[in-house]
Amino acid sequence: MILVGEFGSGKTELAIQHALMLAAQGVKTAIVDIDIVKPYFRTRESRELLEASGVYVVAPEQCLAHSDLPILPQDLSRILYDDSYQVVMDVGGGESAIVMGQLRPQLSEVGYEALLVVNTRRPFTADSDGIVSTLRRIEQVSRLTVSGLIANTNLAAETTAEHILAGLEIVKLAAECLQLPVSGLVAPLWLKDKIQADVPIVWLNPRTRYPWME
Image 1 (cartoon, helix red, strand yellow):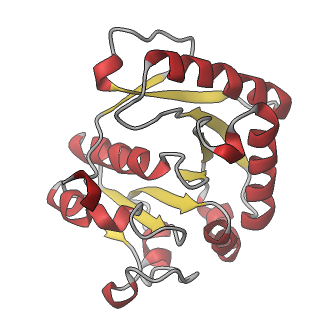
Image 2 (tube, rainbow, N blue to C red):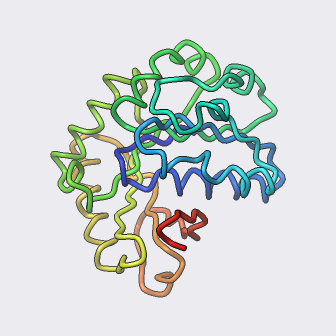
Image 3 (cartoon, rainbow, N blue to C red):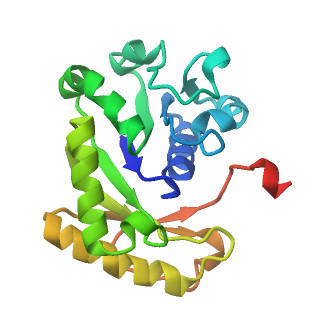
């Protein structure tokens, strides 16, 4: 599973939760960090949590951990070809997505599902036209084929049910234009009694802690 999306879409938190869920089910799981956009929103920042839960973390070497360089992790090819692993890939937009073009032969060989994570509270994906444009740009630079959208509208701790449901309707419009399914709706656990939808719901339990949250 490859999660792509713009900065602030919430794809990193979603990738971490999905990897932790797979590991908790006894599935041999690896998570791959290919996000070169912002150093405080990367899978590698949660390495300790992931590894303690049995998830194998594939990321640039420690000496390059905070660099904004289009560097593929050294162990990536081995993990992609190891069919004993379920692999979750966290890929940023823009410069990060460009790196994926190098992996097209391997990904085509082993098979993949690429999903665009959308937060309609971010400027580039605030409406259906922006979502369509973002998807097409990421597909062009990454050479990936996106097969579905994940609605992840949020304002962190300020998120309300109204935010999430309004965002879902925008994502549905984009999905209709793109002739793609809405593969899921992400919502925080504290809103579980307030949200119902006609698409699968992923109840998010945020795990990531950042310096400004201390």
